[in-house]
Amino acid sequence: MAHEVRGVIARSKGEPVSIETIVVPDPGPGEALVAVQACGVCHTDLHYREGGINDEFPFLLGHEAAGVVEAVGDGVTDVQPGDFVILNWRAVCGDCRACNRGEPWYCFNTHNASQKMTLADGTELSPALGIGAFADKTLVAAGQCTKVDPEAPATAAGLLGCGVMAGLGAAINTAAVTRGQSVAVFGCGGVGDAAIAGSRLAGAATIVAVDIDERKLEWAKEFGATHTCNSSSTDPVEYVRSVTGGFGADVCIEAIGNPKVYKQAFEARDLAGTVVLVGVPRPDDVLELPFIEVFGRGGALKSSWYGDCLPSRDFPMLIDLYRQGRLDLDRFVSEEIGLDDVEEAFHKMERGEVLRSVVVL
Image (cartoon, rainbow, N blue to C red; front, side, top):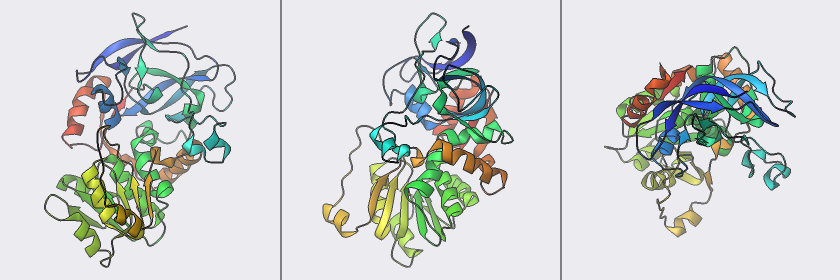
């Protein structure tokens, strides 16, 4: 039996979203039907609406979500009805060359649901990141559901589904920040602040937050930044060096996806240091670096895909840290809203007024 529910739809490039009736089929083999409880409003959803991901309109937006499994299809054993889950957009296949070499967080053949959700007239929808969670219910591959402690509120847990996990993972997994290191984070939105929180969890001694917005720099302090730099008035490279003994940071994390800012991060790292790109560039962006500097500075230039996370490993662990009071996920939630408020939440995000608006269903 198909389910008719409300969903947030982007019908065409740059147009305001609409609330429409969508049809969600019962789960088939390997699939799960999830009643969504909360879903964060992420920049990626705005990128979909603006046509910055692809042009496969109409999109069912929303992907940073948590909820309860309502039904599962044949062959599903990892989750069952009643499980509280965080949705992820990289359900590992277990059998590609990355999985087979023991690096499933790089899986090159991630799974999505086979069946399509549709509009009431039968028009097939493209769910954002294979999830489509700005809806009362959504259909996903069962591997996109990660069971976690149900004592965690969905508003906090769902944030691990994308942005917060991306930032935490950029620090903990990709950069492998360790005790006593210095870290500079360029861009202090939700992802950047999560990278700051992750660096503090890992024991970094010096954490420099860099942004052009004083409000965001104040937020960064709450997540663990020991120093802040407004790069609209202060040279961030010189500032980072000035608070790291003149050397530069051991780890620089770029959380914007801007070539100019990435170059600053590259120049602000110490010899043999690491630069991590977790911000998503535009398709037409081009980066130019002095080639001798790439060689001469040594170290590593890395890209972080979804924080290089393995949901089955990382989500339960991070929820445990949250419940112990060691990871303040609630601090990322600027406001709780309804489905009808998603369009305005996009505008608030563009104006830098919120870290995360979270839709509560």
